[in-house]
Length: 400
Image 1: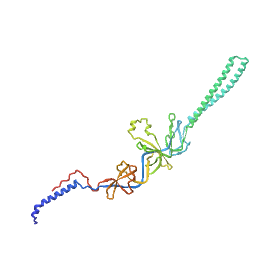
Image 2: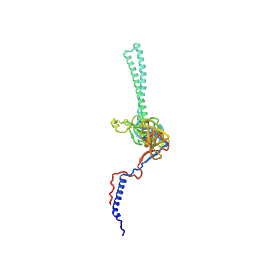
Image 3: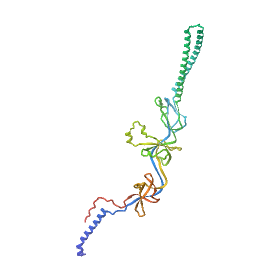
Image 4: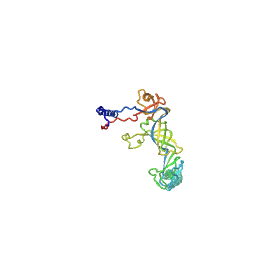
């Protein structure tokens, strides 16, 4: 059997306890006071690129010109000459309304006109007779062959006949106006296209009865689709930065990769809410205010359609192939217009540098001076891999 040295038997437990104490102390230090890890920088490289500052808005596509073609005559729609999507020319017949009532009205007014003209002919013949009788009575009165009363009766008859002729002429004028109106009303039964365009909606179907006595019912809707107007809603915060003639472009959901370039035609002076009668200052202040900007773009291929949603960009500033860095790398701006950025040096340390910023669209910023192509700017910091956060957890108890 192996015999231990008396000194080992005497000091062995003490050495073991000392080693355990040291081990516990080292473990506690590493757990509760971990060594500081070197920070890792998130960087971006300054490079040349195109930069644009724009106002973003949501828009709706509309026809450049749209007209609701209505009926001015009441009756049944006897025939509809067009179909949805048809291209029509100005003056083309698009629908007909049953015209029997209007034809009868025209015949009645023409008959009244003929009657008034016949009455005029009769009155003119009576006038001729009254003039001859007046002249005879005048000659006989000069010879003192008749009484004064007979002469006066002949004179009164002549004046009465002349008045009746004037009244009949007025009746003829009224009858002519009525006949012309009836002719126009008859023409209203044939509905013609007021402009060139495409049929975008058929509101009234063939065989349906329309009543134009109170309001003009819509038969079809025509739209001019060769040019499309984008109605962009621009917030009140951005509307002060846009103006007529600025460069703009938009994309649609069906083809987000294609840009349609145009210019801002006009800005409407007031929001749509002003047209609502129940709009009040209290209600308008509680909701966002948007102003409509109008942009026109050719639609020769017909890809753009009414009511499509557009993402509109109104360009405020732009620059080609300029030095840019992420806007997240910009620090505080000084009094002299210079902005602080941190640049990563060759030794891995971040050094502050003053730069002059140009266009800034909150994503990327143009650097006018202070940086060069290839400089790495710090956009953020992250703790080194493997580091543990300091927590208040208790170290598990060790059993001896």
